[in-house]
Image (tube, rainbow, N blue to C red; front, side, top):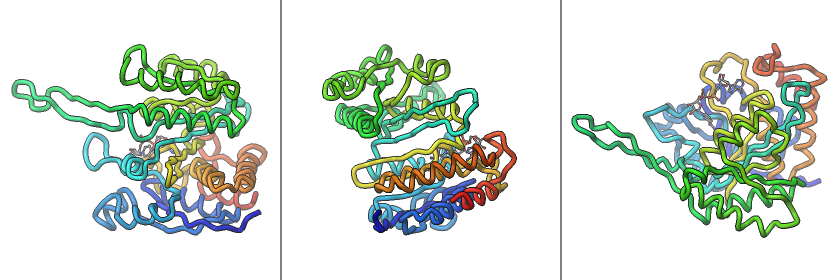
Length: 340
Ligand code: NAD
C-alpha cells in the first residue's frame, strides 16, 4: 500500500455538476482517495466569475497536475462558445475516451453487461470545420461540415484499445466503422486497424463491424461485444447507447486520457431539467473517480468503491429516480458514506 498523494484539478461543472461533484468528493475522501483537490472554474459558472468559459488558471492547474475530475459542462446548442469539453480534449491531447459499461443492478432487461467503448477523442467529425455556402439571396443556404482522421491517430487509438484489452484480460476488440460509404474518411481507420491486428495475433481477437449494424446488435445481442474501438462521433453515440443498457447515463463513467494529462467525468451532461433539485444520480461521476483511482494505480481503492456502490444499489436498494428508486442525491450519498 502506498501513501503517495496526487494534486488533482476539480471542476464542479454546470447544472447538476455542483451537487454530484460534492457527493463524489465526500465519498472519495471517506474512501481515503489520495487526491489533493485544486478547485477551478469552468463552463457557464466561469463565464459569470471570470468572463470566459475556460479560465487560464484552470488550464494552468490541469497542465501542472495532469489529473482532473470534471463535472458536466453546458454547451450552448447551435450557437455561442465552443464546447469546453472539446477544447480541453484538444488542448491536452486527450486522444482516448474510455467508457466502460457494466451491469450493477441485476435482473434488468440487459443483465451481465460488461463492455468498454474506446472512442477517438480529438479528430473525426468533432474537428467541426463548419461553414455556410450562400445560394441566391440566402447567405446560409447550404451548411457544410467536415472532419479528418489521420493514420497516426487511428493507429494510436486502436493500439490504446488493444493494449487496454490485453492489460485487462479482455478477449476481443471490435473495430467499428462506416467504410462501406465513407471509403476514405472511415476507410483509413479500418485499414489501419486491419494492419495493427497482426501485432496482437494470439493475444486478442480483432473483428470489425459497420456502425449501423453495431448499433442494432448492441441492442439485440450486446453480450457478443467486449471492447469496441471507433472514431469520435460514432463513439459518442454508441457509448450513450451502451449506457442505456445498464440503467442510463447516471451509470456511465468516462475517462479522457492523453500522454500528459487525464480528465475523468460522467458521460452525461449538465441535466438542466433536474439541476438544483437534489435528485441527480451521482454514481457516474463517482465511478469516474474510480477510474481516476485506477489511473494512479490505486486499484485497491477502486475495488472498494465498486463494491460499496454495488452493495448500496443492490442489497441496500438505495436508488435514485433514474434507476427506478425514490432516493435523492443526499440519501444515496449518505448510504455510500455509511457503506464505506
Ligand atoms: P444530459 O445528459 O444532460 O441529460 C439527458 C437526460 O438524462 C436528462 O433527462 C437528464 O435529466 C438525465 N440525466 C443526465 N444525467 C443524469 C444524472 N446524473 N442523474 C439523473 N438523470 C440524469 O444531456 P442534454 O440534456 O442533451 O445536455 C445538457 C447539456 O449538457 C448540454 O449543454 C450539453 O452540451 C452538455 N453535455 C455536457 C457533457 C460533458 O460535460 N461531458 C456531456 C454531454 C452533454
